Amino acid sequence: MLRKGDVFAGYTIRRVLGRGGMGVVYLARHPRLPRLTALKLLSRELTADQESCRRFEREADLVAQLEHPNIVNVYDRGTDEGQLWISMQFVAGTDVATADVNVLTPGRAVQILAETATGLDFAHASGVLHRDVKPANILLAKPPIGRPERVVLTDFGIAAVRDSETTLASAGSITATLAYAAPEHLTGAPLDHRADQYSLACTLFWMLTGSVPFPGPSPATVIQAHLSKPVPPLRSLRPDLPPTLDAVLARATAKHPDGRFASCAEFAAAAKAALLAVPGPWHHEQPTASGVVLRAREPYARPSTPPQGYPRTPPATPAQPHPHPPRPTTGGTPIPSRRGTPRPGIIDFPGGRNHPGYIVPPQQRRPP
Image 1 (spheres, helix red, strand yellow):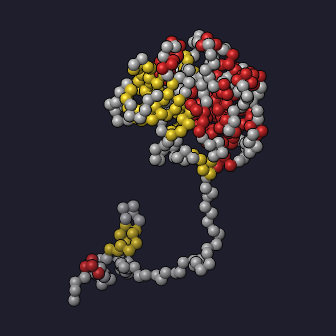
Image 2 (cartoon, one colour; image 1 turned 90 degrees about the vertical axis):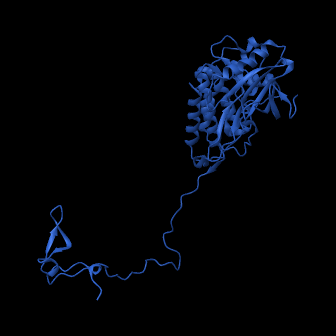
Image 3 (tube, rainbow, N blue to C red; image 1 turned 60 degrees about the vertical axis):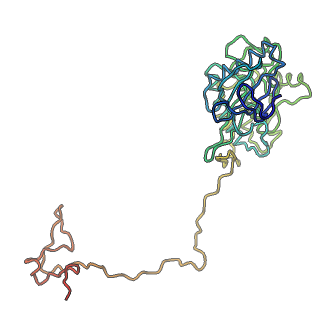
């Protein structure tokens, strides 16, 4: 275990960001650039396991190909004193697993679902399956001032290339988190992008209720529920949610992949439509720059009558004499404008200034 101030592969360790089954992730300072990175180290106990080393290196190779705002960036990888490491983008913020579901509103949960779905569909289009979608692997980036919250998908540690021959059974162990794993993932059947959709649906279930769809006292109980039981209704745990969401979740968690949505984005769009199909407070939820969802303010209603003591109509203003009164028209001829129509107040007097009706303008008068 590294401590604060230790230097590993040129990176200066700041603190521990998290621990997992394959190693530890540290917050570290880049050896040459003025920025912080997430430094992921494979446990020394696993360095002798070729399968673990291959999976660790494959994560860096796969994610390095995925440049997307909703997917964490990989900067570099290497080996230092026999220990494998990956340098990744540091996302300041928290993850969905640590979010308070009592504060997490349905509107924000669906928004997190939509952004995660966008990143997953991009990975799927690039031929990459995540295979471990869960709340702990969805980061909520702390937004800059004036910018909206950003959702980032991370930890492609057990990702695989689509249509590859590597399956769960061939790895010899269950690596996905059981509470969010698709049935085909648990049986070792070939996987496609719809397995990630199943896990994403279980994640939405957790965001809305604070519980996984199939809690159980043992792994065997959880696996059996994923294989045979339907997802329980949301209203059994949270009665205020609209029943229209149950049909969407039931389709996204169909036991056979053919019964699910064609893409994660289609699933997210259906979830949003189902949420808005029933009147509720989520109709007034608006995402803010801080990521907190607030209820929209009611429009201001102007009072029908003015307050007591306020004049209902403004007082009449006495007419003021015009500073330049029009010239007399007696004996003169109106000068036509360019369009041929007479211009009022502009008169041509015979004899000009010598005509008895001509009045010298005030600005041309000489002092007496």
